[in-house]
Image 1 (cartoon, rainbow, N blue to C red):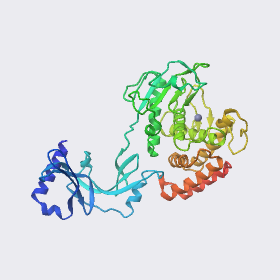
Image 2 (image 1 turned 120 degrees about the vertical axis):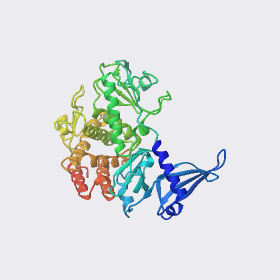
Image 3 (image 1 turned 30 degrees about the horizontal axis):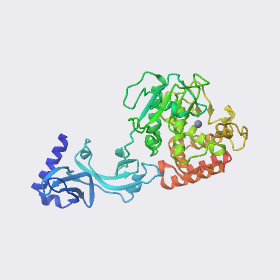
Image 4 (image 1 turned 180 degrees about the vertical axis):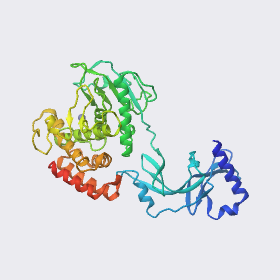
Length: 441
Ligand SMILES: [Zn+2]
């Protein structure tokens, strides 16, 4: 507050004492006149060489008296011609992105700085805004545009039994039906399953935020219980048949966990079912269902491998469920270890009708292609994350494995064209190889 007032006073002094010196390279433009009780309010924005200063604004009353505002002292530097395009690369290319030139002075945003402005680009997506310094493309400030801040609501069922088989979701709704154990602002509950899932909801939200997706805003549910839109889970629930219940699922609105299932990969797997439900809407049967399962395994493992948890060992890489009460359930690198196919219609490919047509079996093909792209193909987890986010956005509800092959190749080409996350055409050659290796293209 004190800094702001000093800047304002300095700015006023400059304007009053030396108006001609300021007028050369700088001008104040009226951007808005707002009728208000007591007389019109005039809003002015500070410009240098025709480019506005971010946050450089003055508000004056109708008599021209300054009421409020902050200005930068000076501005210097060059806006590169390709700067806007370069700045856009801080976000993925799967969404609308706007990049506009501004002079940036950190002190106007209340941050430490010199009080002088440098060239920058303000990059905006529907979800986030970032200020990117033109000299080195560094993100010097960023924030969420949507007001769906991460909101987690966890309810401990403490082994209460529910009719899971018949999907009686009303009875396990976290908030209206089961009492809340830990809301977003609450301290740790002291119940391991509750506190771990709180943590992994956060890790998964952070993973998707980097891909430009607001998880709470996209898949959160508002039960009109005063807790707002939130990622919710009922934890340590039992089924009528089994206690402890050794499973976890996304019920279309929220999550349900048995006890001991609270691992990062399982949590991110289930939340990704929510993302799929909102984007590609892959039908949960046959090949589209297997791809639905694979997308959950892939993003689940990517969260696991990037959240800095202790289980990210080389031996656990590509294994799902390590550390849970049910142990490792799938191996993306070697699906055969759990009787899943590595190739389309290859060994272990399931053709029966159980499990919606083998959605948890034939997902091995999608898992394997993700492993091949990331490790042998050397795209790694960051580039792969953007590629699979692109794929998630482009598949349709009935996509099959041939469609997945196309979506991977096309998606990579688009990302390479935009230079997203540093993806190159050489990377796309590797993607194409992986797609051929699992026989889906
Ligand atoms: Zn699943």
